[in-house]
Length: 394
Ligand code: TGC
Ligand code: FAD
Image: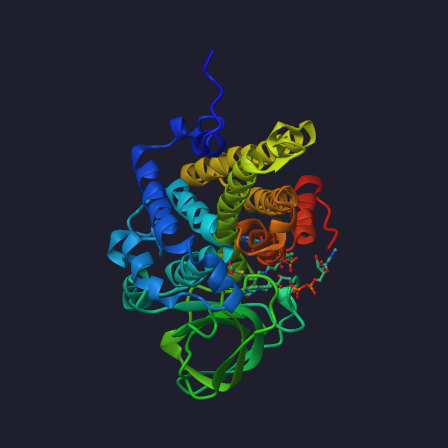
């Protein structure tokens, strides 16, 4: 019988899932973890409080290969497995959900949109530079009056000689004020949703930073205004047609969230466990009380469930057998479980739990966004319900 081991690694891998990973997957995970430990964790609370994204990290993130790592090498990728990509997202979110969001949008939404729905010329023009972090992208689907139901969007792309003119407003757009290009989804003359690569310095395009967030404060979130913006024909994503195209991109980003949330949960369990082992109340560590142990074991159990589901999701993805409702179920459950874990961690820290000197309150506030964006808990419930029962209840 092995000895009881309460070290960080025991918490991180309670079910020995490392035995299911390849050495390459472990290597990329550990490289990102080392970077986040050294460069992000010490300053994350400060950046969050100040509401700034550390743009100086972008070249280092590119060097680590977190932008488009699963793409073919000719587009700047490393042809990593979906599980390796997921582990990268996990480690970024261990630092802060805003950091993972930055990478998710760049890879899963902006780069994937060009990779999947763009022409070969567009792929070669944009993807290698995006992998190097030299071009940052954002993804404009949501509008002030169309979030859960993006099919009701009002943004239009009207045909003109040589291209289209786009008019509309996109809201809650991650990286909006950082991006050089925006992937904008708009309805064409026939009312069909199509994607366009819009340079953010195009005349008529402007972005306004949303500064009132009490969540995701380390992430840049913007409102985009498009006032009759001319977009040439060569910037249309030629393979995009209908709502299924942006939704196909969302599947990629939701997959990353399913993994990223594990990082936030692991950080919370580790911080709460070590706090409980050193915080003395009634003459003994609070970790020696039954109620605190129960809470910590509940947190560990939820986290292990998240890990098991994400790993199987990754293997399904790799085998080509992944269906998008499976991604919905995992995004839904992992985001909600991470929220529960963060809340319990914050409670175990008592008064210190409400200070950003400790990470749980920051994760808790961030996870309120993670639970909402990329499809709310309710929307994913209805996606899975429809898949399970064959009845649409939207
Ligand atoms: P519906 O009939 O369901 O779908 C239309 C067509 O799309 C196909 N489809 C999908 N394809 C791939 N992946 C998916 N996840 C897909 N979901 C649907 C579907 O098969 C159909 O194809 P076809 O060929 O039959 O036409 O359309 P609906 O209008 O009923 O959709 C409803 C619903 C709820 C599924 C959808 O609109 C939805 O997912 N709503 C949530 C919106 C959302 O998640 N927005 C996210 C915006 S981006 C964001 O939040 C970025 S945060 C980034 C960060 O910082 O990390
Ligand atoms: P609504 O659609 O108005 O929903 C409000 C409530 O009603 C929710 O609880 C919802 O679950 C519920 N509801 C709606 N319909 C139903 C139904 N049929 N049955 C039951 N309940 C229902 N979008 C982008 O395009 N790009 C981005 O980069 C991006 N980044 C984001 C970053 C942040 C920080 C945030 C907060 C959001 C971001 N979003 C982005 C937008 C995000 O995807 C939307 O906020 C989300 O999809 C929900 O849309 P909504 O806010 O309009 O809520």
